[in-house]
Image (cartoon, rainbow, N blue to C red):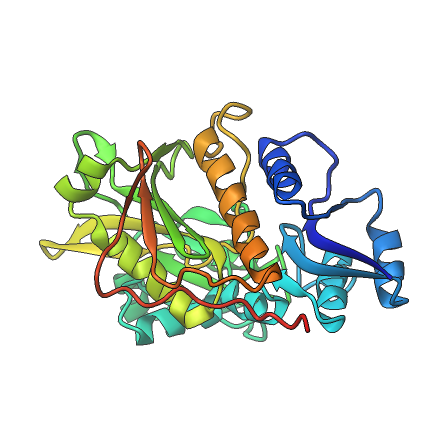
Length: 340
């Protein structure tokens, strides 16, 4: 049997900075690396299912679990069934990425979310909002699929017509949908208070993220304190505690409702973070964060492969290589490791 220490589900064979960083860190740590793409995914599935290959740790960026024919989902389960570990575990991920599930989990945990109405896939296409629901949603509001990604199937300026809701549901008739209050963030010195926070094992990386332009900027130490942004990492660590996910991102905005400043969790859990680098695409993640995340993932896997003790306390990584810690955060979740 051929063993690989580290596998990557990444469909297209291209030279992304993120992939190069993963490969070079694996090489530096003397870990074997397998790239699973559209070129070889069928062959990899055959070898895994014939017990001719084993992947100890698999980083997944491709699986779509609500599609029965998805080959990358099949790879994830084949790796898991052979005793390997998937980042993130497929059964945890299936629940965590479903916004119609996570909405109630977050609300019950005391995390603020936009007011939402869940429309189940079996409900009639003639679904209508009640007057109370319309008032709470406001106008316009957002319609999004529960298991959607990359803004596919999203309607940003919905007014509540039956036609709009039916149009959104046609994106995936088997999925649930959320009708969600539109959040208008406050501004800090002309910058929208909208953020994306990356959770990478025991590291938390907060970024400014403009929801209109997709522009990222790493939060600096003085900004973190001046704007009292500690709730960003408190919320994300709480989401990790609920979902037991180790690598994901979350969108959080700060708005002012009824004169109260509140941190509102927008998109819940994005388990397959887009790590396109800013030097390749202006809407990408800053290059230094891309390489940092790749190193954190491989170094965490190395510790698990070699049974080394892993940090359980979170470190918050701010711009200019500043790591800080906060009291009161839960411990970082453990992977579902099964390797003997």
